[in-house]
Image 1 (cartoon, rainbow, N blue to C red):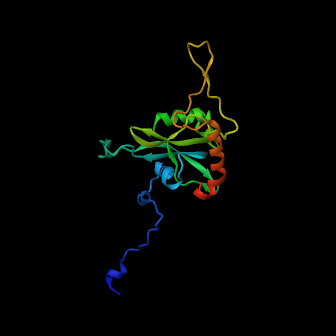
Image 2: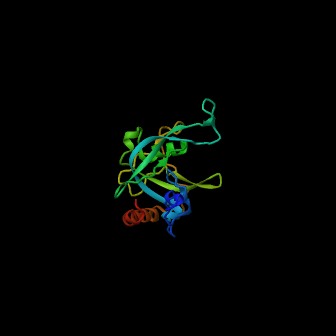
Length: 191
């Protein structure tokens, strides 16, 4: 046996149905998971846990003390599946997601998020598809939180929750789709 054969790297064929985005997998949920892997535009998830994780939001933001990209701790939501917990979480990247999470769940503290259901949907930001948390609670949630709140200047009357601007479906269609998807696709998609 030659020296070359001893150090030959191990190799395995790539399955034909492997997504190209899986060549460099992401730590977090991506638009491609929704569009290419599951063929959906929105999904209701149940939060299993919340964790702080190190991220590098911008590779061009250099830390002057280390001369490396700045590392930031950001919150990540992990979700329950029929087999435990999905391995990739949802990164809370901005204030929009943070506010939507509070509005959709009614939670004020991280511990209150465990077991809550949220809707994550594809949205457009700067002409690019992105994942966003819907500010509305999922329609299949039996006890949606109170989202109306008094505002100044309207004599203490409650302001109705903002409508979802990212869907053309009626509430009935969305409810039917969510129920059908929750019942049939968890086993198929690994969620």
